[in-house]
Image (cartoon, rainbow, N blue to C red; front, side, top):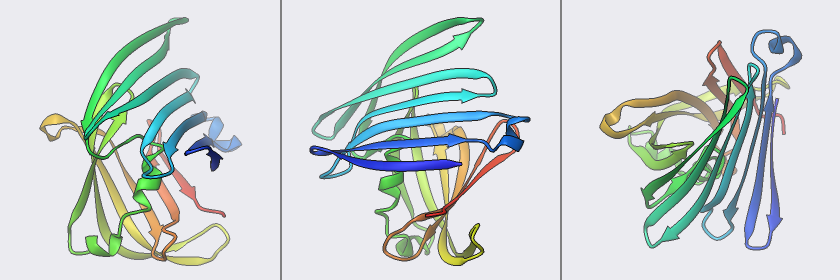
Length: 206
């Protein structure tokens, strides 16, 4: 179960995404994740990002603070990892240019894309700050498909694939599939990602 919330805060939006596995799935691989962040109202630029993860009994936390200088984007990253009962903290400076997002603010960027223009095989690329990594996000549209939701309704959607790579085009994260409504709202109707054990599916329920 996942819940995404957006609230007003002056010239920014505050974002909150929480996700957890169902009770039956907890027996195999328990997930309790919280993603928090803020983006500017004017152009959806990320200001801050935090990921707090409790997965399969392990705790981790990533914090990123953004600063901008023209087209240059700097992310100050602090990572917390628990190992052998001790907390290890590492810091790193991430550098990007142009449009830069994280795994929370990217949801809003993805809703601004005109996917009808990607049906010819074109792609959209953007930079992602992910923990201590700088990744290249490549978005391509597979085509239009019907998606059956949990309430048995059927919606037309663009089937989108996300690919994450680093320098040298080395794959850096598992691919993600999403189905986004073809109407002007571009609501993510279904998102499918990978876990160390199996896959996770998230259906839109309103």
